[in-house]
Image 1 (cartoon, one colour):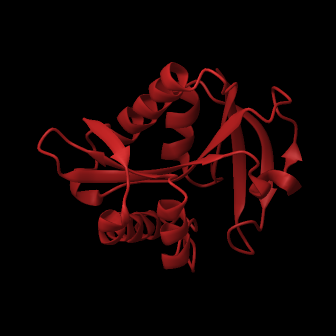
Image 2 (spheres, helix red, strand yellow):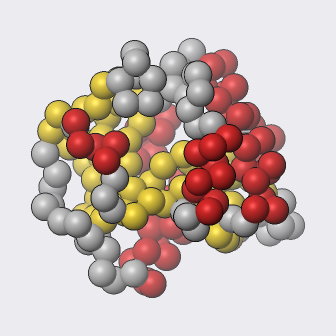
Length: 173
């Protein structure tokens, strides 16, 4: 398993994985990513900024995607809560999805783990990782807190969609 920075040649694959993720959430009755987020322009911007990554299995097939965004992340400007550490040396993990063809293999945890290990090893200047997820996305909350040690630090409302309610998490590294 490995991840690599996405390029424009990965655009269609990323979009497919994210659309599949949207469908998985809808099927689970979770109102996350229902609507125009994430959208084509967001994916193009993530790739152009060098923030989008693809996650491949050992046969080089793409199984997932993630965006790792540098600070400042203005998504959190209206957060109701408080960070564990007051720093501008943070990265935010957004738009993580594993294609349904690869569900149930622990790939989301593996992707998070590899990204965190990469950041700790190659970016010692980073002091904090931040992530958010929909209040109904219990599977992602379990991964974030139980498996990866993030702590809940706040709430967001209406950021991605008018009715969205999200929990915000942070991990000091």
